[in-house]
Length: 356
Ligand SMILES: Cc1cc2nc3c(=O)[nH]c(=O)nc-3n(C[C@H](O)[C@H](O)[C@H](O)COP(=O)(O)O)c2cc1C
Picture 1 (cartoon, protein in one colour):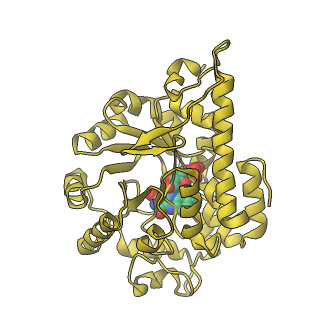
Picture 2 (cartoon, rainbow, N blue to C red; picture 1 turned 120 degrees about the vertical axis):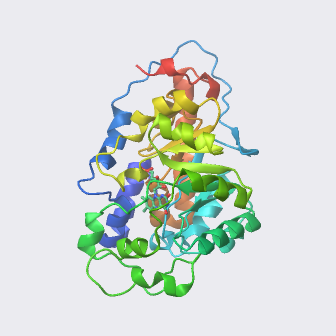
Picture 3 (cartoon, helix red, strand yellow; picture 1 turned 60 degrees about the vertical axis):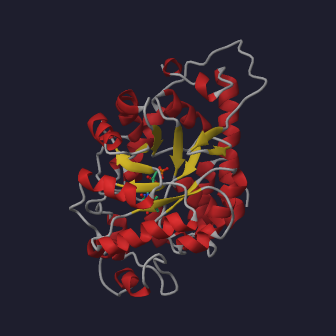
């Protein structure tokens, strides 16, 4: 199955997925204002490219937590990937390893973190949702560290789950053969029980810990011994607090518009966070990355790397591992071309003045 860009991958995925699954992947909170705004923020920026620069040799690679990666791209954590394709997270992990970029595995993966680790030797990060039973949380962290995950990504923008009206309308459920494989089987029951409304909302309601605060961060970090990345920050003061509490990285993110609708688009939040902490922590952003030029814009505004979300699911749905490989290859090729056309042969050449 062939596609020329991420939007075409989405069209293919939409054609082959059940409507409930497509809606779960594509949708956001309430009126989905932030879903659209994340994208528009990129489209609204123009690039002031440089000319007559020797761009005959370009370097897209960089180092993330001691690992050489081929591009400033990380796969965002995304739940329930076996909804997209029977191979689910295994296919994604293999494609990421082949592309030489890290994958972030969700707490809500449909395969266990150990099984995904066994898929290959590419860099894997583990995304953590803190369970109200802190014993379960500690156990997850210990398992991720023991399995060889290289960073712990704590998602902080889900004190409550955003209201996803598409999921509510569709009574979103996991089929009986799918589970949140990192938890005990019975813990997925709310995702499967016949009931009106969103099974995901019921499931998260039953496990979430809305009492989590900054003072919990150091404990989580110390427990894993892994670099701690805080995902879901959109303000300079929160970013400073995260770094002061020992975070090694920040993801400027609004969860792809799936949590607080009308939240600030990630790209617009990026400059203030970059100014506050960009010199002392690894700074990532996500939300709306669909093109190589989007990556250039994010880097110009201070990100060191980006996370890519939905396009990975579109590739996975369209063609399994090969589809995810294709998405990653497209983004790599597009970034390479954009750097050539911008007169920025090295990542360090992508500076603030490129944005008009
Ligand atoms: C279907 C889906 C599932 C997601 N699951 C998670 C998750 O389990 N944990 C998490 O931190 N973020 C999750 N996210 C948010 C992504 O990590 C990321 O922030 C967002 O998708 C980036 O925006 P983009 O899809 O526009 O690239 C999910 C996003 C989608 C679309």
